[in-house]
Length: 532
Ligand code: GAP
Image (cartoon, rainbow, N blue to C red):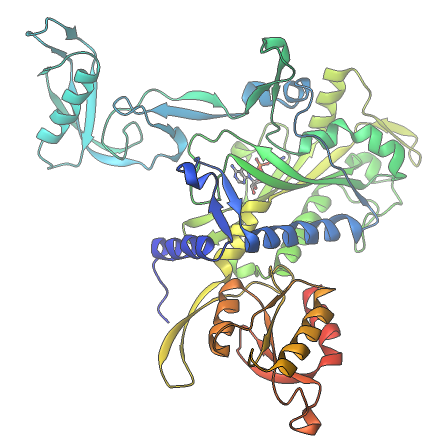
């Protein structure tokens, strides 16, 4: 079937998310709140599956990574040490006409004619304004539009019937100084700190200012020594955490992609500095070497993470990679690679994997006065460990999984009628509901009883959905849209109408729509092998 255009595709995805209960606008009954999203029944399961699977893969299945669950609000000095208080900002500009704010680096370059006015005055009211103002319009468009915008600008500054003076026109290419919505001049860019501020305790004073964490990583650095003391780990080893992070984004956009409240899954994998590593005999996880330096560890984690994405249905051909150039790197970073997903609205970052040297621990050592050093028994040296940081966003990944799963297929039903099947081809590991249970008819007590037995058997191990309403084809279709990978139908053969099929059910595969017969006794092991 012809692929819908990117915008149209995204609109359909957003609409399905609401209709089927994956994602709702936060506070929708009050008109919503920009940059905040809620997950409905299916979305909540999907998100939980993603986090649980990450946690299992990153720590429970590994010897060399332990977990942490820290608070969202921490001592404000943490953010001084990390540099967030002084530098965690985006360049912001305001539209001089509407006051709407933009991130300066997200404005698409535009070309056209700039109409500038050196001043305006209102002889009737006696008020005047000498501010220079300009408007960008496409070359050839009637200048009256620019004049109309300029009059609005001066009128808003208290000049009710402004006269425009000294109009000049200049043709420009690729400027980012004008509001793409209305052509109005923007302010000069200025830094806007993205951290949400609050006060701890009843007194709203500067002394009590605290921040909602903009990343989960810093708690791991701050607790490094405590974890080291209790976890019986030697370098190389990691500490991971999943949790909420908050950024007062200037321009939240692309559905949940850039939100103001989101969740991160972060690992800080601590390694020896290269000279100590060269003399080492201890390995990290399987397939690693004892004397690896930071470059090998960095590559190792990139590959681990890509394999992880593949294991939940994001194949390498829907991913992309951006190795940051020297000039893009943070001053302390040795290398950063972004893993990108090809969203309908563009290829964008899912996760960053950074080699951060020992910057963070050194900063906390300096600001707290507490040693962050590690004593290496093998080389009898002390040093501040270095770190490799794979940092992923849960909500972005959930959005990528939803976009990747959304499929429209043209099919022909039993009566020969063509229809469009919308199917969410979510990997069984992350699918919100694993299996739909359908008695063929709801008014046959023997079928219903058997179907409920199958439901109870499976429900102990996985989320199931029991549906006895409507034609079986419609029930399948509803589960296709919910992303349920398997459907089990209990029919008269299950009850022994054909004796050789007694206690077997029809198992339908969501993606191929193929049906096969399986013994009830084999169902659980089969399904478990697909969803774990
Ligand atoms: N500790 C490193 C760090 O926080 P980051 O690149 O700023 O690095 C890591 O964030 C990940 O968090 C991103 O790759 C993205 O998946 C997610 N993320 C960041 N800002 C986000 C936002 N405003 N909305 C949703 N996810 C976001």
